[in-house]
Length: 251
Image 1: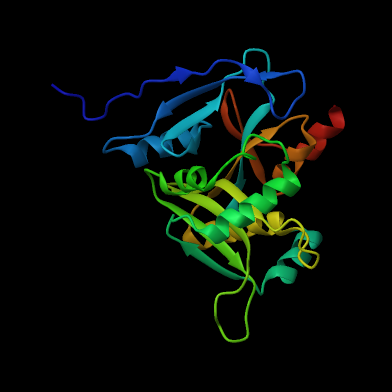
Image 2: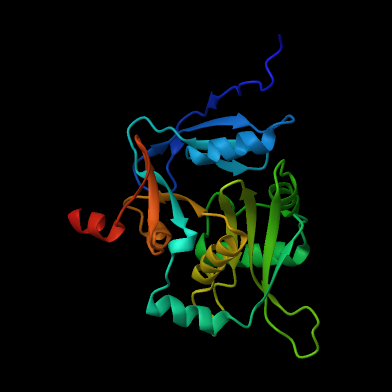
């Protein structure tokens, strides 16, 4: 008899310099996402800490470091802090639309501006239009590009100030990659607003979680991922709530 679902084949990358922790090296385990059961496979892998990039699912598999931790927000229990409520009010006039995963030049230009400001010289800095199109359009699962635009008086499309490539999984929204106008003087905190908008979207859709990817313990540029409570992390015994503030105080 032929098995109804073929068990995926996993591969491991060679070690390379870690982009988050100086002096460390990173290694990933990955598998292809293809075939008739791709949605189910992606959901199952997402629950054990894998992330999607185009038609590949991967997770860290470093030899001497466990700093990368998968985190997810419990959408229905999330209650914004006073600072987060101010941020929501400041940006509630934005026009938000979940678009089909189709790359546009407007998105690409915003991405380039974001990378130049926030991640100069990073791994994505050399991404050209074709690379960006592949990132957005080569999705074997249910995906969207959620756009954030400034309002206009005549109802036409306003200026694009933020976007996020997002997967809808069986148990939540997975934020694959977000970018925004990091130099917008009147809209500080756009990146945080995009996360909170995803939390509100997940809650409205009845989805319990928003997957934020990897929180890298010891990396200042990843601290923003644990500002949303309650939050869970994936450990050897599965997902569990944790207080990142208390953890940071112990270090």
